[in-house]
Length: 137
Image (tube, rainbow, N blue to C red):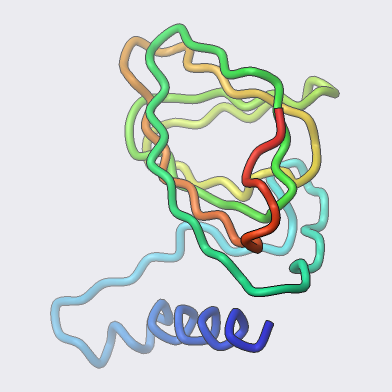
């Protein structure tokens, strides 16, 4: 847990706009910061154990609907291409366009669908432990 805290503090320090001021030509933009997922649910505490960070690039072809699933770990991402709609089991809906960030729901059933005309691409950062799966179907 201490290593995770140290890594997150280092990331926060490097992401701080003050850091950019000390480096000519470097610009920093906060895409999202929060302690709740996109539906307003507070994020859970980090799990105990050795932290494991995973970064995935997920490509979803046009017309594709992902299966209903949930994530037992905190994750956030940025849609880099296309558009994506995320729908929870309670029919809460988030429409994303390229460039939009997301703090994903945790332990809540949901699915994503690409209703656009091009492949949607999202980069997702998962923070969990080696013992926890990233996704449960």
